[in-house]
Image (cartoon, rainbow, N blue to C red):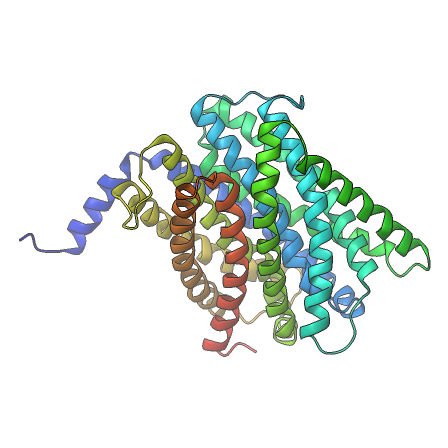
Length: 412
């Protein structure tokens, strides 16, 4: 029986991962870009703390709105990654093409899910929070208008990344999830904030809410009944999953809202929230995309016990997670110092991100693998189900693990 030694284990890991060194570098680079972009989103969140006070219940919507962008366009990136691997990717916006149908499906889902999120956020905020919240019309205007503005930008970026990946030989599965989620963070919060200027206006807000709701319902019904097979399948498979994902994201927002006082105690913690949640989702998204492609290509089989190729992906996830969360903590502290925001200190932030991040990473591994093989066994496309279920779950798990880490380290 061969004895175990740390050096021998490290050597075996290096041999195992050596064949995918380029993929690891691509994923790590994308995650760094993602974290940098997410810090901008965090600064935006910290800077609109007055709006969070003036618009009670808005914080419940924010993680869901951000998560929706990652869910819809992360799944789009995953599907495009599979198309690149299988040689069917052709950049075209014509409705009858595969890419065109993906784009139309993403647009319809953006409108429909944004409206649903507004209703869910109002309902959850009204039931579980103390005091009054903004009206349903306010939620609809902020969610739908903010969703449309941000989705237009994120959709173009997703196509650009796919096109660039084909030209540069990048693996779309390694770069799509981090870059798309980062873009969703950076764009969504300002878009939601701009949309808040349309609320509280007598008659106008209600009319805008009614008009946007009609457009959203009409677009979703048209896409649901479409005769184009790819468009129809994406909408049929994705919308129910996105509704569940939206509810989970709303609960993540409720988790933050319930502890809002603690996050406001140190502004750096508000800066940390978006990048932390999105990094956990991006890490899980990378794993989900890689597993989905391997299932489609027959590299792994949908078995209860993960095969070697899947276990290698688990190791890669942990290797990416540790430096990403350490760098996130340090960069959050530096950014807070530069902008004069209160912070508990770099070492405390490192402890918070590592404790919370490793808990979330463990859960991400479990959800990504068993979620992908369950979808595959049921005859669904894992690209349509893996990313939404994973990222929404990680929003809630990330919020809970972040709160748990703050409690463990007594950061108040």
